[in-house]
Amino acid sequence: MKVVAGALSDEALAGVGHFLTPRGVPSAAEGEDFAYSDTSSDIGLEAPLSSGTLLCLPRRIAVTRMERHLRSREMLVALEGDSVVFVAPPQEPRDGALHDIRALKMESGQAFVMDVGSWHWIPFPAGRRPVRCLVIFRAKTGTTDIQFQDLSEPCTVGR
Image 1: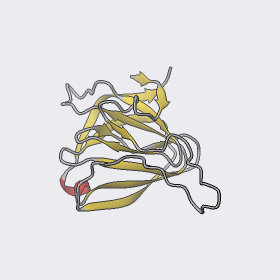
Image 2 (image 1 turned 60 degrees about the vertical axis):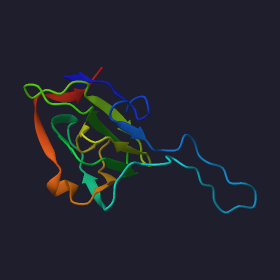
Image 3 (image 1 turned 90 degrees about the horizontal axis):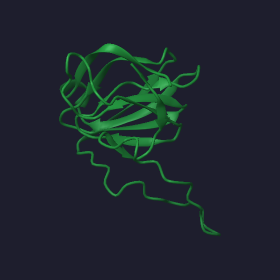
């Protein structure tokens, strides 16, 4: 299966999560040292939280398995480098298949939160250099709230 990689946005994340990156660069008033802009009034993550960094090595952009968390949301922040992230809405797999798999282009500095149960996989670097991401979710999610699904066929980026 091939999917077209689209820009990360509220529309692209409909049914999967929500976009956190500011809609433009805030400008500081004259004489001020900083500018602040809310990205979300509530990111929807429940305490206690844990965080980790994820190093994603360059490889062929083809997802063969996905994961989900049934009790927690996950926030993904692109710290360094641009990547492609595969996501799909919450659902039960059918014969190893998930419907509505999307490929999203995540630029360095962008962030989004996935809804509980949304399927996703580790970002694929868009270029030849590794990508670093910050992952934030409920403490122990990676050991007590993770479900994997091997896909019946690989999903790649195409036209």
